[in-house]
Image 1 (tube, rainbow, N blue to C red):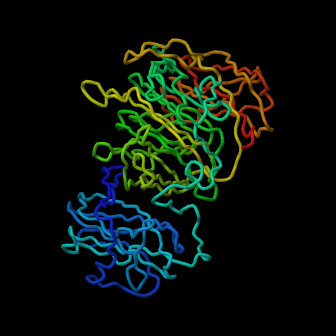
Image 2 (image 1 turned 60 degrees about the vertical axis):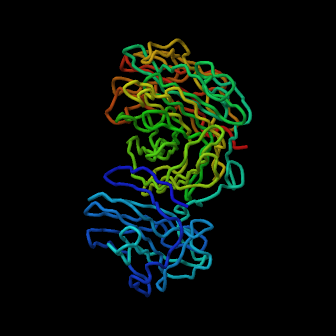
Image 3 (image 1 turned 135 degrees about the vertical axis):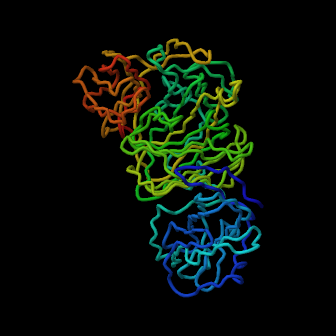
Amino acid sequence: MRALPCRRVVRDQFVHRPLRGAWWAIALIVATAVPLATGGPVRATQSASNGWTTTARVHRQRVAPGQWETTTVTLTSTIARAGLLYVEFNDGTAARTFTDGDAPAPSYWDNLHFAAGATTIYTFSRKVPLDAQPATYVVRIGIFDPHFAGLQHWNDTAATFDVVPADNDESPPTTTPPPSTGTGTGACGLAAAVFCATFDRAVNGGTRTGDLDPTLWGVSRVGLTNPGQGELNDIANASMTGCASSAWAFTPSDVRLCNGQLFETVNDGGGVANLDIYPKQPFDFAGRTGTVTFDVSADSDGTHGAWPEFVITDKPVPGVRGMISGQIPAGAANSIGFALSGGCGIAGMTGVGQMFATRNNVYSEPAFTTPNCITKGSARAMNHFEVRLSQNWLEVWGTDAGSSTLKQLAVADNLGLSMTKGLIWINDVHYNARKAIEPCECGSQYNHTFVWDNVGFDGPKTYRDLGFDVADANVPGGAPFAGDPTRRVGYLVGTGPITLNVTGVHRDQTPTGALLVLNTYSFAAVVPSVSINGGPWIDTPWPFDPQTYSWRSLAIPIPLEQVHDGANTITLKSADSSTIVANLSIILVAASPVP
């Protein structure tokens, strides 16, 4: 079987390529041609010869039989050339064959092409055989001419790690990679899910959540915005594919449940738009590698189209997404996420095209590797994804359309996340998809439906927040870029004050705090002041970078004693007349137990 090719991605001056070539083990081929050192522990070194510089890093220094070791190999060539990459695990006496699950893993990848001066990074996971004896293993790297025609470079001590008995394994659990094939047998593909949504029954009743239960789910939308032209978060009408009616409709009819699946549709109206959905139960990954799963019809046409995103945020702030066209996006103070917008250079393939993070409101895009891509999905043949996350490590695994075999799609390490618990978001993001095909502007994903299912995560049971939404403005919107009718969902605060209402507030247990979450947009670096039920004004300093003319996401702490059961009022004012707000909710933190 041949490994799937994946596109070349240039990020932070690193060139990330997939592993490709034959997928069968030949672990002893080189042993007869290259002298192999024997003996005890060897210090890892960087090796340079014949225009090559190579090194490797293992992600677990101590690993037991039956566990997984992830290895990152880094190569640089001074000239452009083709070659074969060989990676060996040697226990000091001979090369040993590891597996990629139930079968021997590949040890070489043929017909690779290396650019002059470019750094190439490969990351792959291997399972230590159950019969492996305790020893110090050496990772050795060989670069050959294609088809083993001749040796170009050999690194005899690229890295080392110890195989130890299972009861002596002291490796931190946060670096354990996921299995490379199959899914869990429990709910949502997890062995022990503490949250699992299968979207079997429409609940309705929310002002923004469509068919989703507003007690459990939050939904936010960001669309066309320019207060100078009367656009106050205007959302274009949309036509849904595959869920009963395809009639053009406004929010919240863009979120529906059909046939045990979640359907949502966005029409970008000729601009940038996103629809974000989250469950109000936090995902806790403190001191461990946690797992989140979801299915989605991942069929993006790329970054001038529509694509799914996955994000984890420290607070339940609305409107979050990755950067588009250099504009700092709305984001949580602390978050990590990725976009399923990546192609593989061939039709019908997709993968991870972007990773993004925020730390103390500073946006960045971590470097990552992309070992594989997958075939695009559909509502009837979905892609299953598993996200493995610790404070320093993120892996994304996914399946081909309709398959149950997982492939490693992306790896990022050294993340240094400041959070160990957060809310998970499944997002639909658009960037003027008509322009995907120029000059006719006839790209088809400007109005596009993604289908989701089996959203779940493992870990300790935490709690559930209770959120209570301010109803959207729901008045006719301004003149759209692309001629699509729009519905205005935001509010112009101006200098204010304006007062908005929240109803149905309640609590199932004593909350630990209260927040006002919202999106705000202004030409100036100002945050609107708020008053809850006529109480004192709450002023918030601008916490972001200097960029304005863009949406921002905020979670403003409000006094819990000022929030009443039943009806509440939120009054806002601003120092700038252009200020807009949208997607406002009162959140009672930990106000409900997990069933």
